[in-house]
Image (cartoon, rainbow, N blue to C red; front, side, top):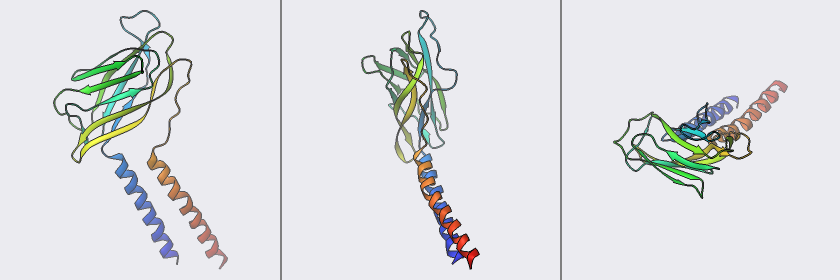
Length: 189
């Protein structure tokens, strides 16, 4: 009986690893690296500059037309794009869209220089979101997630666990309980 239980646990562990490995492929991540915001260059005192980064994983690359949108930006003044990207900002909605216009990139890239400048008074952090479109060998990649954005009178946005973490915990906790119960039952015999 104990041998069947070990096989069950190993099977569950393999399933969780397969699920988490599957969710980690073909992804685009938008992040705000440490050190942002800084004083905006060329503007009066109080304007803040947030410098974002776009990262692709080992299976994702960019082709012309791919890109991402950041939403929930308070105090948006303007936005600037790195080489081979165009930028469209909507001041009334607090959204910025970056679109790739260059040749196909390689995989595992970290592209910097996505600048969002805010008006004075928006140097705090708040929760925002992003949606991103890219390309992989399997086809189109659609990603979304949380990202820290400029806010007025807000505190840093809390990070949230990825769905794979929840799946792993929901399988591991009951499995550990079963293992302890079986161990106690075997010791009583």
